[in-house]
Length: 446
Image (cartoon, rainbow, N blue to C red; front, side, top):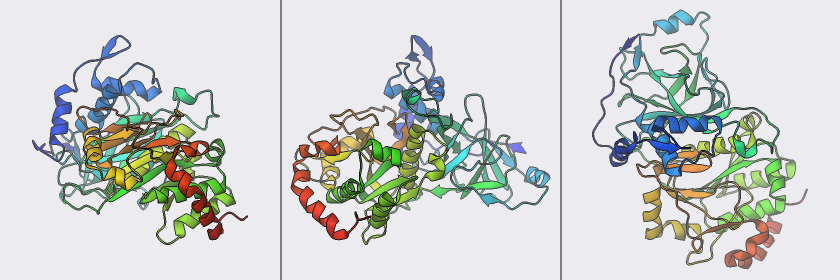
């Protein structure tokens, strides 16, 4: 194995100004509980779920951007001759692709998804969404992938990570029976500028050996290969029977909720499902299979069975955001108990997101929190997916040098529960028609 500097950092990129802004301020000291710490350490405090340290959102977001965008680099990367692979490949086992929540390499990382993120064109990153007890502070893992250079079979680069939500998160220690203490985490490995890996594995040693790989989806932003975006996609926190029961949701209400989102002109609703009874499954499958379907279903059972509820939620939202990152101009993150209502100048989602004033402010901040008069426990927000790193600690993290968390005006959009739907003139006018439509579709008979 040999080391060399295999990446040159260009002075300008797609988000060069953002990166520069973070670079200029990232080493300032933050005040946390009356003691100072640097940007790297601020993020580490959240590894253990200690979320009540008085850290401002902007400081936490800046630390996350630093650790997932600026800190990873290839200056100390290793190029691997392949001898380590031949040495350890005693049985000649075939390389296999891992599935959801299967361990990757010899690590304790349970894979969820991987993308090649080239939005910051001078720092293309392999981003791995995963769950597990490790890596944490002091632990090292490495991304291994096939290099573009045929003379160098493999590249091995240290992964830098943040915990997006800790398995011992204090919000629910006394409220739920524990499935595990696994965290949901995001790992970043800076790849060489011209490399475009389509598979990646993780090992605990640089140039280590692994018999399994995780497929990588490339965003292809800097290369100008973009899928035409639609206006609004909705990422819904996982559907489980417990979530539906908490929301007092019946199959009739579920169908009505989907019809209402269609009425609001959402392009697609991405629903993460676990164990549901036949009545709810029938409704969801109908909306998935119909012509011009509104629902896209993702089987989340493997993750939901191994992760605590709040951790599973955060993992699903990040999985959805990165899977749909180039598909929509806007992504709304919400739960099944939440109903979107308009009480001002807008009548549907497309009117809102196409308005020049909304677009300008959204792009400046990355997105908005959507206010609820009920103060629903889980955060609900609308974002430009191209301008965020993902969801962490139930907030979105903007890919910005000056992150800010803003709330959308309630006269634009509001979130309510079903029992409070009469706050919406549009819902009240259409509810009778929607109920009649459901009867015609014969969805609700057992």
